[in-house]
Length: 428
Image (cartoon, rainbow, N blue to C red; front, top):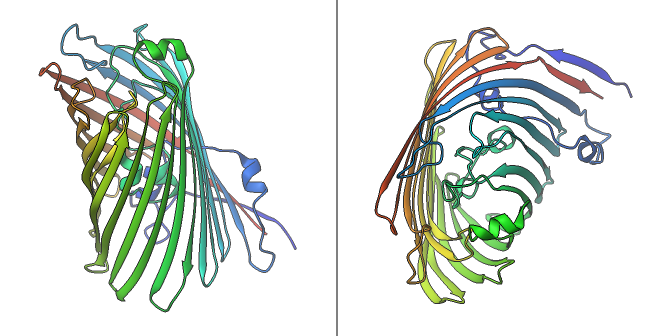
């Protein structure tokens, strides 16, 4: 048994370097995670296995005319960021292992948005047999409450996003302080084929959010929190293009302020492939929430539509559900996400990211959690060389809170330079 080390140039396997590779582009901001977890993964001796490393580095300059999204006393912030990254993976006929990580060194000209180090790491593994599929997902991120990114910097590099990845109830919620916190997520899942057309799936998710300065966080009414969720589902394939699903879910939320809620939901879903390039899904059903503020009966809706065109890809996600706010109370939450990626020329590309949501507390109290929020980000990307990318991004944010009934607007600009080294690959 031998070991072969290869370095692959970054080019499309069909068109060479004449076409912008969107899989490469989406992985630009992403990087390394624990190599130990990869080395401890099972090796299938009967199949060839390829290991790869994707290193890159990004330099970013940004300006925001209302960084803290305030209705009064607006403050502009100028800053910069350097982000070394690494992605890795390993694939056999039965196992697919992927990991990413990123370290962000951030400097600004405003003490309210302090110089800092942020980071993320993610490990994902997918093991399949003829009658079952086992997945494990682990995620860690250190960031602040002033975050503005609406696309998680790990999901596109590891797996395609879905509506569960797009939930961020706290986006833009705390605008007067930069509170550091760590978020940990562990999500194992399993699928079993139980009949010629029937599949059973069981998923568990654990989330833990810990503030680094708990006393300062409490001054803003936020606390360390924990959430557990169990999601069983049963799918039945009606035809090669259509499947029905019965989904249940239980989630429990607790925080250090003794706030809690239990949420139960059940839904009927349908997945349908309209063509080879278009697919959609819809799930809907009742949901019941019990908390200290009282019980509530509502509805949950989860829908997606994805279309692959010749030179572009469009994905939309809609979710209406119960989610916890940082303050520890359940929210009825409606959210829409749009992602559009398009190749303009062999060297130019465009992407559009959009998010809009409405948060409404289930109790009768009106606070800053009750709000409308929208964010739109058009991006132009130029592939200067095979390995060098230049990116210009405009970010617009808007918010209206029920307790003030005032509008806050923010306009931001980012310029980024990213260099990606050739992929390093080893086969055995």
